[in-house]
Amino acid sequence: MTEFFQTVVTGLMAGSLYSVVGLSLVLVYVSTRMINFAQGEIGTLSAFVAWSLMLSVPYALGFPLAMGLAFVIGAFMLRFVMWPLLAGAGFMGQGPMGVVVASIGLLLVMTAVSNSIYGPEPHAFEEPFKGGPLSIGDVTVGRHNVYLFVLSGGAMVFIWALFRFTKVGLAMRATADNRIAAELMGVPTPRMLTLGWGLAGAMSGIAAMLVAPIVTLTPGMMLGTLMFGFASAVLGGFNSPQGAVVGGLAVGVMQNLTGVYLADWVSYLHLPFDIADPGQYRDIVAMSVIVLVMVIRPTGLFGKPEVARV
Image 1 (tube, rainbow, N blue to C red):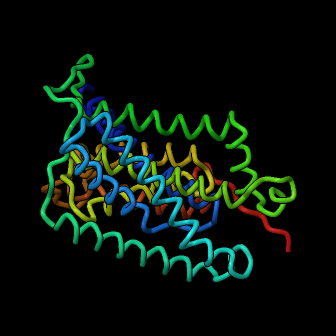
Image 2: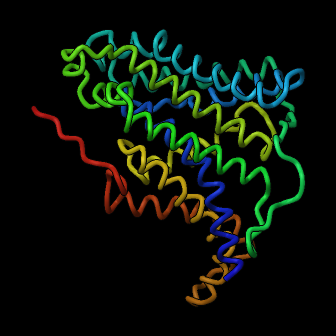
C-alpha cells in the first residue's frame, strides 16, 4: 500500500506540471478557438532568460522577471502576429490553417533563437530548495517536487479566482463566449484577448522554469511536456479550464501507475506479453486511455459541445 501511495503522489507532482501547460493551451483556445503550437517555446525562451538572470541575481528575482517576459511574449505574439490573421476578414479571417501554420512557424523561429543564443548544450538550472527529500508518513517526496506542486497549484488557483471573482475575468469569459455581444456591451475584446495570451505565456514560463531543473535546460526541452499538456487538455475538455487541471493530474497518475504495476497486471491477466521494462509503456498506456475517452466522449470529461446557430 505504501508503494501505491508513493506512486500516486509522484504522479500528482508530474501531473500538476501537465495541468499548468494544459491550462495555458485552454486559455488560448477559449479566447481565440485555436491551438498555439509555440506555447512550449515561449516557456523555454523565458527559462533561458531566467537562467541568464540568475547568474547575477537571486532566484526570487529572476523567476518573476522571466515570468513577466513570458507574459509579454505571449501578448506580443497575439497582438502583432496572430491578430492580423484572426481579424483580417472576420474573427477567423484566414481560416484555421493559416493560424496553425503561423504558430508552427513561431515555434521554429523561437527554437532557432534559443539555439543560436544559448547553444544546443544542456544548462544546469538552479533549484530554489536544496537538501534531502521530505517524508510525509511513509511517502517520500523530493523538495523540488513539493515546490513544483505548490507553485503549479498556486498558478491554477490564481487563474480560477481571476475568472470566478473579478470583473476582468468576467470580461475575458464574455469575450470567449461571444465576442460580438461582448463588444456591444463595451468590453474591450482586443485587450481581453491579449491578456489571455499573455497569461497563457506566463503559465508556460512557470512550467518551463519548474521542469528545467529536472530535464536540464535545452532548446526544445518543453516538447514532451507540451505533448502531455495537450493530452491533458484533450482529456479534460479544451473549453474547460478545470478539465485541463483534472486531465493533467490524471495523465501523471496513469503514467506512474503504468510504470510500476504494468508487469503485475500483465501477469495477473495471463496476457501473452513479456514486459521487461514497464517504464517504456507509460506513455503508450496513458495515450491509449485518452483515445478511448475521446471515442466515448469527444468533448472530453468536462468539455461542453459547442452549438452554433446556422
